[in-house]
Amino acid sequence: MIDSVPVTEDDLQAEARSAGLPADAIDAATRKTLLAQVIDRRLLVGAARAAEIERDPVLRAAVQRAGEMVTASVMAQRLVGRPAPASVAEARRYMAANPLRFAGRQILVVDAIEVGARGLPEGLLDNADSLKDVASTLDRVRLPFERRERRFDSATLPPEIARQMARFESGRLFRLPMGATVLMGVVTGRQSAAAPLPAQLAAARDAAIAAKQEAQLRTALAALRRKADVRMGETP
Image 1 (cartoon, rainbow, N blue to C red):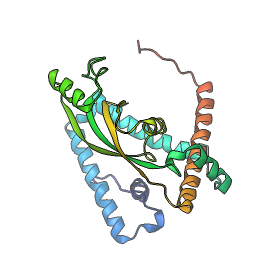
Image 2: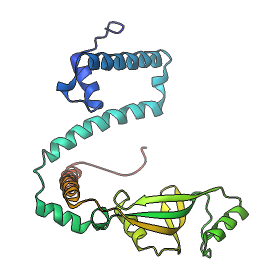
Image 3: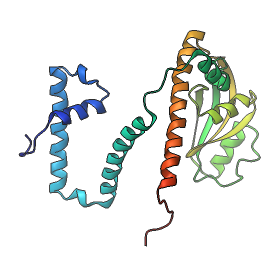
């Protein structure tokens, strides 16, 4: 009991699930740790309520989002169901469609300059043909940047970025938007990183199952959208 509010077995099970622990793996020591986590969190929540922090609209929206994320995750799992194992044929098709994650996997070594995209004037680096030009231009306009060697694994990059980087010529300056930053770089080395075939097949099976689940979820969400009244615009 915490200030007359009980901590239940369901609370401990939820705590264990959030930590990725199966129900049958909760021994006495683990229960004690989980219980301490629940107690500490609820004491902090109680202090937040006493300080009226919960009235902050941004915090309220964040709390609502956290609850929605949990509920949406559980519902998504129910919608896609338990996937059937991927066959060897499915795994091989997935490997063929994504060579840079499997047989063609490579590590790219890049001499790179990274600069924030927001403060970068349009066209500023269009005429640069070397990293030295890039650095001097950024210094001239007093834009901060970082230069360092980076290693990119084609298997872990987003597919489109991996395909772009695989086409870059060694020694030739390239430009690549990467979210909040812009990468200006030169490929200085390529190393094959293909795993043994059995490991590739195992990874491809898992990836094929995940891709199938994503497709099923997209279909289910499309059906929900068709039934719902979704309107875009500002609240009056």
